[in-house]
Image (cartoon, rainbow, N blue to C red; front, side):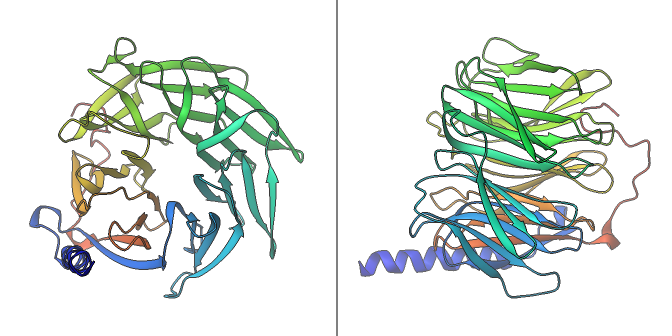
Length: 383
């Protein structure tokens, strides 16, 4: 036992030392600091409101609780509370409405939504009786302020979507072919229309669905033997979707040996490999995770966990660049990334040694920023 404690102490000290080291010369413009959100916590998601306040949803292992944490802008003390408990395993997603109220989706066998309405929390079940709900869910807001949701139903295998209209949740099945949706992500474009990325486990492939205001369309973007780009192995893990200024989808995702990026540009899909690592032969839904956000220039940033560790990839107007934030320590980080209106990045994650819930904050040094012209190529385009 004494030996195990000593090993944990050494590993923890090395991780702290790593975080304290200055960035490499090739990436000096990004600096990262960390703070502890809670003593424990997994499967977190993070959001930042227009005022700069930080909101985090997560699973607290004692009594399997859904917890919410809040850090006011300029503050140093986190405030946390338990919203629901005795839930078993579940994942969470969080977003804030235009008034700054947090909405948290979570999936303990049913799709549940916790909403801070004024000074009190209200919890409701969405689309009850549809089937067993587990794994990923997403909550987003359109320009009209209406909440929209995506989630996975395990029995039968299907990915679902709902929007709140006139106080009533309008729900539908988006796809039920090829065991879809265990990992899913939702974006709402500037027109208010939903766009989804999701994994299909039969084959293993990356799917995409879009609603144009009248009809849904669904396509396979990449798979072992079909789609717009054929993959040599399983693909679509850890997918995350965002939409650019022209309402075109951008999707980060993994195959078993790389982080990839798909962008719909000039009427067609373009695919890129952003980061490579040794092939993972045995993977689970926890092995890979990514979250894609856009800065004020419309350039994507991807926070991701992989066998390489906790990393940040970003498009600088000319090329993709990557930065290691935290090295592996034998487990997953269960995190997500958000960005504020000043382009600061927020990455929630589980400390791989202490199991505490942490937040890494990335700041960009503007005095080292290279001038970027409007003619700079977009991701997926050639210069």
